[in-house]
Length: 238
Image (cartoon, rainbow, N blue to C red):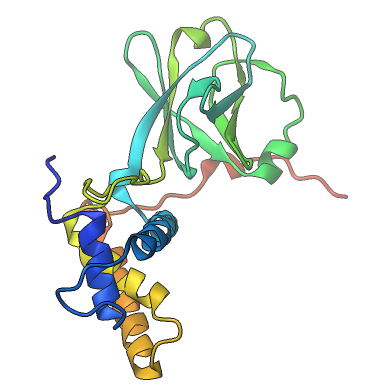
């Protein structure tokens, strides 16, 4: 998809500064002000990526399995060489060598800790994600055996938006998000401005972010089903 030329950091910064009453209409911001606002806008984009569902940031990540290997690091230079993902969503599947799919179930930390034999090999059925500072580690259970290693695990992964480095480049945000970025930046830089103006910037930023968060969802109906993995489990008294 071609990103419209108007969706640039420079335009977002100029309009945000104007909205906050810092830059007069028609004026050009100084190089120091541009540098400061570039950092703030990148920080704002990174934060927005953590709010709700960001459909354009989600990817089907393929993880080649290795017989006897339970843990796979997701990071630059890791077992899967990618930018550190923000998170792994519960949806996942195993794809065998004949292109047949089988659902994989996400485990919580407590579920994974309660497994009695974490080194047991066989057909992969579940996974646990450990969120570390500089990587995500994915633990598969059962540990893939030689047969399971002929296929791949696929996890629905959310990646961070790409940081921009040039004022004229296209933002890694859809055009319909531009107003949220513009007013979000205005709210960030309005500290110290007259109270009424700062409150207006905060209100506009919150309104646009909420509207887009409500809109940025899947169009298909959402269905919920019980976690059958928890039914029929043996009960123990402690």
